[in-house]
Image (cartoon, rainbow, N blue to C red; front, side):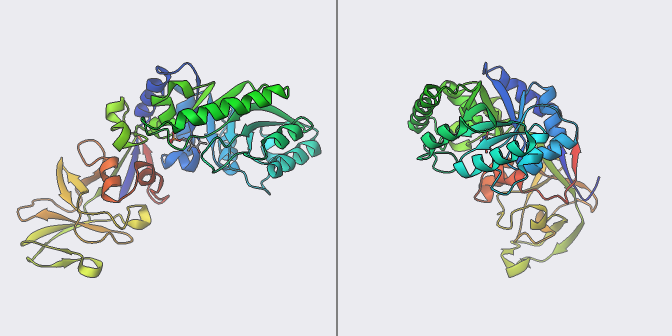
Length: 365
Ligand SMILES: *Cc1c(COP(=O)(O)O)cnc(C)c1O
């Protein structure tokens, strides 16, 4: 056992891909951006493809390039490639590019013309999130696409509120999408792949599935929104990441002892404290409260005091027999959940897993 280990359960990942495949007739795109939500880019991508994902999706071009360098030949879409990106490299590696604007279309077109090749693109439409995608430029974008060295493989958009089952906004976005697609088809462009759905769309808006569903958080076994959609477990998913460490040291302290920077945690009685050698530089949020902590042999011990850069402290209680070197679990089976950590830190499960730092080794189990 190392100081810290993020265990990546690839069987659970397979289970989650298969569970979603049962709920849709669309192809699955496994979203592996941000180091596969912190789970490890290449092993996750390979496993997802083996489990039935047809496509891979990333934000950055360098993420797509890393997948190709690992020998992965599945179609890949990179959807956040700002001006100045190495579009020629993307085209040569057969990486599909998202086109949200005229500026980016023009850069891709000039790279493609230089190579005497055509680029594979997916037109991104803003249907109401008002983040990426063409809004007022749409008609002009269609006109320029017709003259560019590109193959329009797909057209897509992204939901702002698909995790809210009661919200009518998702239906409005689907309607807007369909209107924009009609316009595109009217101009003689009929992409083979239309896609809109994220995990929440895949799980609770069957009308959004179109040709591809882009599966992110649910593939990692987590719910897109615990409050509105229930836990990952209640959705039939299995968490992929668990986080483990070892008890660095144990010591007895008196009642009323302030713990850590600022003395924010104070012992209520004479007790044993356990030092855990993981901190905010490892991705443990500094604002984690005593609503979470670690388990040792299935028993929970809460955080006391602030999380430091490399370590935090747990209250083991006055009768503890825990010993330095014992294995502890921060989140995982029999311990706190990733959702518990998210709630205790005022954030979402996406952020808890994604922020686990590179210095925590990922170990496939
Ligand atoms: C991250 C992302 C997804 C996946 O979203 P989840 O909520 O994790 O399923 C899908 N599509 C795009 C464009 C994304 O950026």
